[in-house]
Length: 320
Image 1 (cartoon, rainbow, N blue to C red):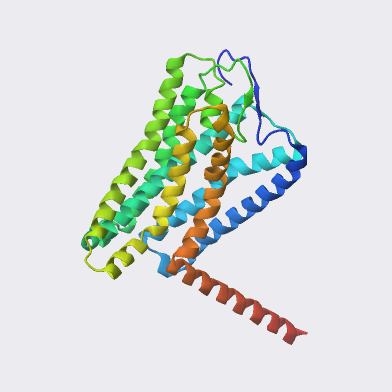
Image 2: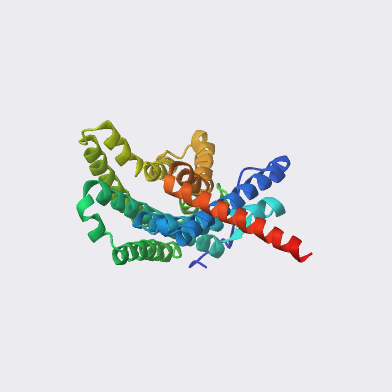
């Protein structure tokens, strides 16, 4: 609860007041949520179970998949409950808590993506030093550092947000407690709002610059490879990650950099769905469709599962 606060709850406008679409939207987002959870849990399970995937790149990918399950769970269950019940209200404290976990996971994803780009930079630009530098201990340190950075940085932002005063209006033009729609409802001093904006911007900017620098070096190194086959092979090792980075940062930058006008408001909401709902769904698809090791691991897992089910059926028949 914020100091000197007159507003105790907000109303999430969601996708507008269209009762005839509520059931359809509920079913669509329910399918997306189930597919996102299943896909990311499957990727994480493959990374743990398959010895061939016990490498730094897949260690980061496993963490990213775990993050995506949490990321989706901060937004979609609340949205599904709202679509099903029609209740759009959320208390100010619940809204800030949702934003804390959402913002922490966005920050962690930014740091994890930068660590994955650094891993690809070492593999392509410093191949002789890769095994020595990117050892198990260093991978663990980078991963723990990414998670801690995201959650600790958000604590500072949330402490500042808890000092904001909300006097009304109470309608959040989004389907979850997003940063800009919530900040816009504050009637606190402008300096406090600017400080929160600046800290949030820095939290996203630092890992983005590291990712950008890594890929400038990677692309520069790939272009210097004399053979076409060599360039294609080098690029294939980072293409999946590059697609993920482009989708994530592309939608993030467009949503938060576009001017807040009535014409662009609906576009912003669509793009918000893209990076909060569809990106976590796309990540396992991108890696499973474009990565030979993951496809081979998935094929082996399916083969073992099929064999186990067949043997179990045969043993049951013999018992009868």
